[in-house]
Image (cartoon, rainbow, N blue to C red):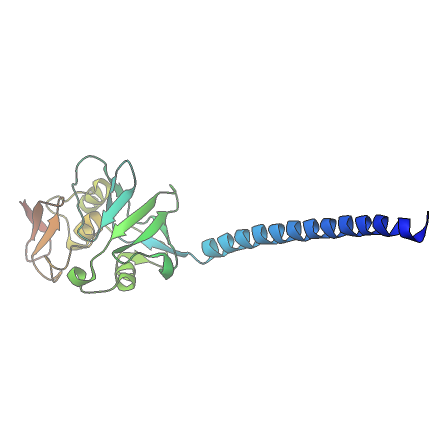
Length: 211
């Protein structure tokens, strides 16, 4: 074979080698991308803020999602359920919170909940509110009386319960209707259209529930 005959063959070999190298580079970039995505997911999970609910969170399951609200909606009808006080929950980074609320995940069930929030009506920001209704350490309910524990377990209010018991059973009342917990009447939203009043005596125990 002459030098002239070898030249085209060499060019073919070089072209094949170049194609193989380009394919190898593509595969390496693809693998690197997959690993980066995995690392990012782990980082997001690792940087999630883990907290524990101090009060029951009343939520509603629809066909599409689960929602809770600063307004409470303690008796919202079909789909209503209670995320118990003391539940371990995970909050994503601030960048993943919505303008009108925030997301959290219930650790034990994997339920993802959107919590609608109104800064003006609560007189505070999201972060301050999360600090108010959750704790950085596990929450114990052992200190409550039998009547309080009954209400906390069912997510309802009964006569004889203490203010702290009602707070834990029904959640923190919306500030635009109950500006101060020192008041002897707390207003809760049953649903989006109806409210109820929880009336306490001078000792801070429930004496009546009004519509």
